[in-house]
Length: 347
Image (cartoon, rainbow, N blue to C red):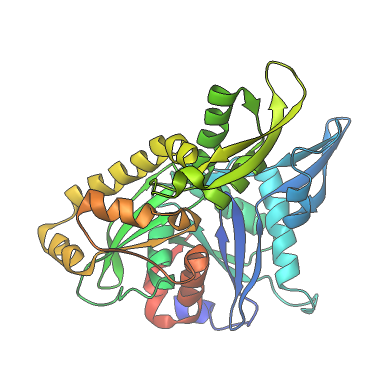
């Protein structure tokens, strides 16, 4: 059976962007139907774990669970860290995406996005999780290729196009041409590392302990990669536990402080992109000079990040439309359009 035949059956086949921060599910001929946090709430009793909630409901519980409950993020740095919980999370999302489908129908074909630097062990874990969750067949697509497809880059043309996808766990750099990846690499720094940097800064400079959800909110409210004239006056309140006194405390943080807190992860990502530019072939480099860099992923939405990257590389930089969902949209295009199926690899 060839690849075309495999994709011929069923309108309920799926493409999944199994992200460290969020899982996005694309259904063939329907588009994106699920976009929720990759978080699972688990009850532990006599050493046995039982899933209580998944996605949005589970994230609301983060940092607020009693002793016998825990919220788990089964993916770290873009790969599966807890296989058992990952399987149950994927099964939950597949079931919701296929709601109303006949119980006699075959399991879906699933395309899953993976970091370009995933090891063989990590890829086997992803395949096992999807198959155990009910997939009939699993295909993989590297995240830079999916991001390029979702951003509408001319991946099939004989010109090089560069994409930088900044997700929760990883930053992916890819250069496409003639339907394939000329260059791809993955750095395990992304939005989560930014949240950690903010939490560490607040503890170090203000003796205030905050959780990951609070750090993420601050990043979204006033986070920036570069300070502007207005940064000192751009503030947001923050609450946490005073390290010295032990009680709750509220304070104000300025955007200038958050820029300082994010300097290390932002610099790491910029250095990673510069390193990629040094490794691509000369002809492709000329194309990238002309066409510039396209940014995707949630991290690309950090204020002024595109301007910082443009200044540091000397290239034009644009943020893709619908940047948060480009990877899932690109995987969906590969699922539906025979023109792009060459980007898929059997798991």
